[in-house]
Each structure stands twice: as C-alpha cells, then as structure tokens.
Image (cartoon, rainbow, N blue to C red; front, side, top):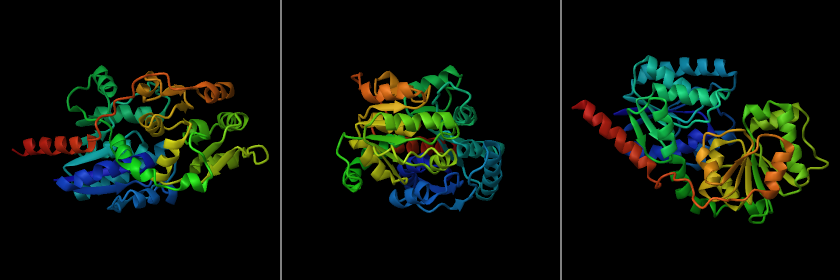
Length: 359
C-alpha cells in the first residue's frame, strides 16, 4: 500500500514527525513538501531535529497570495499524484498545502485522509477556516483529535469515516518533553523559570495589519515583564516594513530567530505565560499547563478556553496588558487530547480500511 503525505508548514512537520514512523512500519510513504515554509529555521531545521526523512518531492512553491499559492500547489501536487498513483493521500491541518492536496486528490478520485479533522473557529473570514471546512467535506477518513471536533463534523452532516483518535501533536509533545528539558536555550538566553512570557505572532491578520502589530508590540513593552519573542520571518519583515522595532524602550523583550522544536518546547514549558496567535501553540501551552493569551477573537481550539487554560483577547492594548497582569488558570481539568497513541490508532484504521477494501 502506498500513501502520499502532503506537508508544507512547521505544524505539519511536527504532525508528520509523530505519524510518519508509525506509518512507515506498515506502508510505503511518499513525502511531498509543498515549500509553503521554506526558510531553513522554519523548514529544514525541523526535518533535521525531528529526524523526518528528506521529502521525495519538494515542490518549492514559496510565498504568494492565497489563490496563486493554492493554484500553484494544486498543479504541482496533481502531477506528482498522477505519477505515483497512491492508494491514499494524507493531509494535515488547515493550510493552503492542506487544501491543495485534498483538491488534487479529489479531482483524481484518490481517497483522502485528514489529520486534525473537525476543528472550527466559526470565523469564515479566516482562510484557515475555509480550508478546514472544504477539506473535511472532501475527505473519506476524518481523524478527529477531540470529542468537540467529532461534534463539529456531526453538526455539518459528516459522520461517515469519522474517527476519534486523539491528537498527534500531543503524542509528539508528550514523548519529546524529556529531550526538550535537556536543552540549554534558557541558560543561553539567561532566563529564569516562570520569570518570562513566551510570544509567537505569525498570522497575516496581525502581521499585515500595522495597527494590530503595533498594539501587540507596545503591549509587550508597556507590561514591563521579561519577554522572549522568536520572530517568524513574516513578522520580522512586517516589523521592518512598518518600522515598529523599538530598540530604545524594548529592553524587556528578547527578539530571537526561530528555534527548533525541542528548544521551543523547553521555553514553553518553563514560561510563566504564553502569548500567541497560533493554534498549535495554544494547544501545546494547554498540554503543559501554561496559561495562554491568544491574540485573536476566536479559536479553533475552543476546548482550551472552556477549561480555563486560554483567554481570547484580540489585539487591543488594554486587553492584552490586563491579561498579562491578571490571567491565571481557573479550570480544574485539562483538555483531553487522547492517550498519546493517536498515531498508532490512525495507522491501524488506515490499514484495516484498505485490507477490507482489497477483499
């Protein structure tokens, strides 16, 4: 049996690192990298540290507008799929790589498996939300990480092929924490445990909007807390474009280059709080019991808010600063992301499904 796995961004590399080893024990995997993330720190560094095999195909699409990028990916992925003729195409998450992979497979009538199916922010102005909805309605096997995601699918009339498996990022986070804790990044940056806030910002709604980005940066300065801020390439370009670096009054902020998965996990585990607009980081913060302040008005991980680990503040300065100073975990229960065996469960379901079809 041959499976084509389509990846293109940091969160997808992490998910593929969790699922890939289990998959390759049972089937032949063709790894297709769209090139959506292409900087060394955001791409090859993750392949190196997570020991992901070199992609069989690197499409090198790079940055472009949503429509152009998705179109270029669709054309290139279709060519690969026509050459390889896999039995199943696996797509991850909610990016343009996800949508392009699902569309290409659907046009060629190749079955689709969606890892992280059923997430919903209920905000159709987010490109990621459109991608999630479309891919779920195209997919044959929908691997849902939580009970809420199964419920979301059911509410849209999708029940066939849905499997509650747990979260593959949870698998990797739990199995990686012992390695992460040995990393020396905290000492290198002269950080004390629970004495700093870890910040990530990368979504276009925040990076491409000068007012939003300015509010975020000014909030971090005004809060007077120690801040560590790994800069996504898009964010670094936006700060330069809008001339928003504040070197004279931002001594509390350490701007650093993107770091590898284990180093990031170390900083997250030891942070007092996390401020982010990333879905994956919200989840990782919740997994390790770190209060999370989300720079959005909604989230696809509503469970993290409902259990009290996460607060949605948008990009208003007063709301961000108030959360920095006062937000604490108020819930008693953590989110149920599974038992750390989601990857094994997914592979079992896939192999069982195709064995039954072959008889």
